[in-house]
Length: 387
Image (cartoon, rainbow, N blue to C red; front, side, top):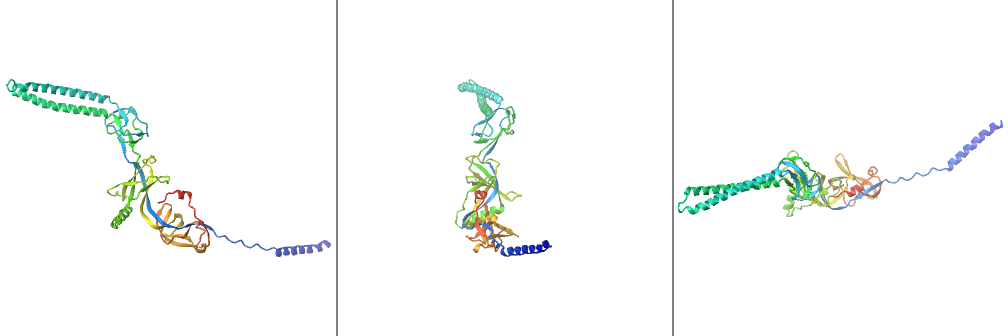
């Protein structure tokens, strides 16, 4: 009976203790929410070159396919593939024996003709003093004179034949017509080379090189009108250098110059073929390399540039997220112009000194307060050449 009376008292004490502890304990105050961090780019104005990048192809400035001028078997190859050769170096030799025999025969024919001419000239010299005394018929003398003229022509023909034979013998040595670098031989020793048909090898000049690219009708007209406007304003058109961007994104150190513009646009594509020449002293550029030419077509004064990834497009309209007073975010419509490298020129809707959000756009809702920090370009973007 005693144990049953104690249990309700114990339970009551426990409940009172819990109530006291609950009353004494207080909930911690809610932690303050930190504003999201965003990286901002401070807009600055300045003169900026406006350029366009066009896909191009590097070719040799001069490239010659070596073809033999006489037919025969290749007996010597006097170069190593890929080596540098000079103009006049012998590269191939074709069996000269047949052509040497031709020279010997031509010399013999010439000697025979010259001997006949000397004999007739001696006859004329002997006949001429006898004419006043009518010691010989006039007809004999006239016939000797005619024969002498005929033999002179034969000698000239035989002499030309000898020169041709010697020339053909000289053609058995295939020499480089230019100074450059030679490729792989296409005919081995013992192979038959046909005159004017067989390609023995190819020699290319690598300094300078030619870079070919195509310009659209629209770009061509814009460039021509700018040049015309400059002339009408009394200003000399500016010939700005052309830059070459290599496949790895690096910039070729030597600027190029326009060398050739085609007379007509290519039918079907509506583009104009253009060629630029670039110095290549270290021969880094090789024919067949794909690159991009960067043409500076104008200089914009007080230009405003922002990183391209800061621009948001929505339904054909463009916006920038700007951090205003009190670090409050606002979304601003802008009018973008041409792209320059990894940046975008803004034509309207922005002013110098504005802080544009580049990273953290998802957290930067209009009207919210953010914690801005300076934008640092990526290493790849920083290394990319600017226009």
